[in-house]
Length: 301
Image (cartoon, rainbow, N blue to C red):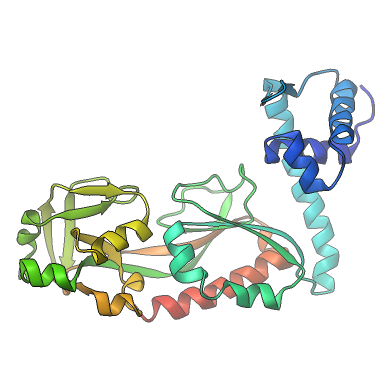
């Protein structure tokens, strides 16, 4: 086996991340033919095919999947090595890949994200708004914002705050159907559910030390809070919404909590990142920024 070129390993990783040689070549600003030749040379030096390619698709071989994991580790170590120099200079720079839900992205991050970008002009941000659980390490994220408990021991969790949730309705919906005074009445109303969070049709509500379980028949299920909230504003039904989505204008004038003293158990929201990533200045800077953002927004629920 010939001596392996680390740059070729990183190029192979870039091709897999991009999904095609064409997209990777554009991102790397290099000719596609040169990129293809580098990967072919890498395969030749290893004596094995890493990528099965046709004119339209590419697929990792079994050996390619195994090799890819080592390439990711090498890239991470290179970034840490570079960061050790940047850290000494307090330089916040480089590619930063962040993931969070669509709802949180629009409601919490969008109004203030430009502040971070203005402050850190050397950071190239890749923000992915996704309503699914991502594999932070496998998908190459530097940091994700997630609600719920940490289940991956490879990650560090920094608590950003607590999200309270309750049922909301539009003012015209309340005018049409009237106010309700007890949780059992929810069963007779049109309920809209956030499908990716509320799997069960039994809703547990708490009021101080009291608990009440209500069985509902959803009129609509949707996996996006932005769409869900709009349906509530339009009077289609009632829905469980985070208080932070309904406590500011214009929503505050359009929506009102029904059974305001009854809510779902509060959930914690975390910033998750791979161990040692906080030592990279760009990640540390974003964690500090996002802590302040969430603290301010969730404290005003």
